[in-house]
Image (cartoon, rainbow, N blue to C red; front, side, top):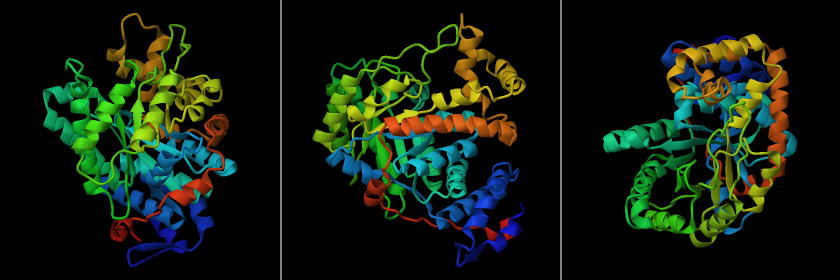
Amino acid sequence: MSMQGLRDVIEIKGGSIYVKDIQRVRNLMDSLIYNAVFESDDEKRKAKFILIKEIAKSCGAVPASIQGLYEDMGRNYPGFTVPAMNIRGLTYDVTRAVFRKALEMNVGAFIFEIARSEIGYTKQRPLEYATVVLAAAVKEGFIGPVFIQGDHFQLVRKNYLSGPELETDYVKGLIKEAIEAEFYNIDIDTSTIVDLDKPTIKEQQRPNFEKTAELSEYVRQLQPSGIDISIGGEIGEIGGKNSNPDELRAYLDGFKETFKGTKGLSKLSVQTGTSHGGVVLPDGSLAKVKIDFDTLRHLSDLARKEYGLSGCVQHGASTLPEEAFNMFPETGTSEVHLATGFQNIIYDSKYLPADFKAEVYEYLKQECAKERKEGQTDEQFFYSVRKKGFGPIKKKWWDLPSDIKEPIMKELEAKFGLLFEKLKVTNTTDIVKRTVKLVVVKNEINTGLLGL
């Protein structure tokens, strides 16, 4: 599909896009997004992404902040937990599957996110990620706010300790890039620099809340007019010891004292017993995880009643047994982060050709050899590194034929449906419509570069 062919279905007037035929635009989206993702010229690639994003907004799929819904949750918990989904590979196909299920089940409260680390190893910069998600929304006919989130925009501890300014500036650069790409939800994670050697909990949390406040102020300076970006904070490094009320209060009180801005945080990530990706046993099966739901209930309650936040956020949950998910709405958890479980469905699907999987694993064996821990079985090693198999051979994943991809997407759709049901986000389009403000931010389209 050449860019010139778009002239029949869209019109560009005064820098704005008018879609003349939505159905034809939807029919063209597969080739439009594919051509943009695999465009070799950086400037043209960026121009194509911006064009697709502007088309999406004209079709009614608008990047948005979930802030209004979370403020409502802070006043009166509505009994559901918002799923935040990290999509690492086959992103266009997988997000299409999410939108299909959301439309079928009338789900409005759901987030697509990507973490700092994932941006690197999946080779999806914020502009690409946001555009692919919005392209999928158009393809499936989704109209309404699309929540795109920067997950774990994190200070890496060893980098920070050796060069605090350098590491802070790196995260600021990432925040700026994400906001320009229309990520209007950002999770700041400076829990990595909590100093447990200090004598009091407040002093232990001080580096955390001071840096969160600094980065939050930076977000507020950059956010577009009319949009309040939803900002999350974090008190417990995921995979560490469980969080407690004293830490929550020390962090949030310290943040309130330090932060110079109008709106503060909308939610708080805590540690309750999970680890990212789950823990894999020598035979390749996953160890059972015990979440401390009492902690989650107590901390979410505190965050709402004393600080007006939407509640607490649970990370590392996608590999939990199915029966655990209904506990999140019951304990007042406002958001749950899900990633590895979707990746596992793709890799472990009987529809993924054995020779293709072997090719990915062979690549990982060579490239990730240094990451192999002593005593790890092949199953443990591949499980721990296979998230890195999506980015470097992205085109081969995207080029898998539809008779392979479609049945895998059906398996994922079933998982999304189950999660939506358990997290009680079915029939949430009305509350989202009522609480979330849609603001369309216009980006300049480079018509000359695109030949339009």
